[in-house]
Length: 110
Image (tube, rainbow, N blue to C red; front, side, top):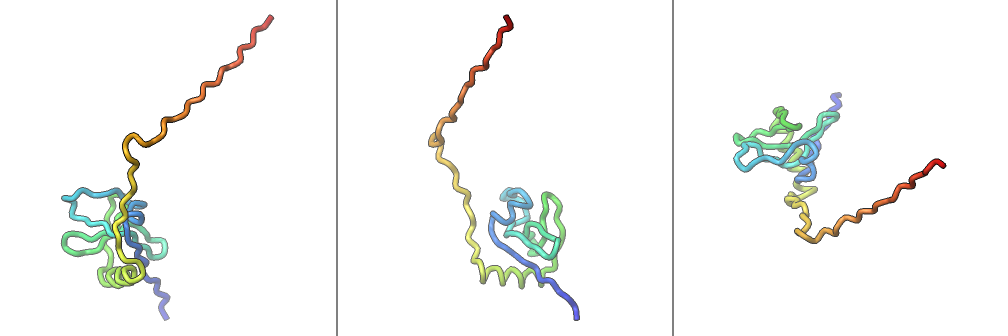
């Protein structure tokens, strides 16, 4: 009997941003989320020719398409993909920093 560990896929920007940086529009990789199997983990991306890859920083390694597509289908059932948009503070609404200046005691020897 073979002990098989399935791939675990989680979707969204929060997941892939732990492993790599955002790509430009012209980049052939489209980041989907994160992928994990045992100790192997990283960002999940799909290339222009519909191949799944794991991305860690700039290192890209291929993944088995069949297994990843099944894991992706399971993830979409459990967690429908909604792009996460980080809230950005409005300009000028941040409070001014508080600066406290402590006077030093100066001891004079008599």
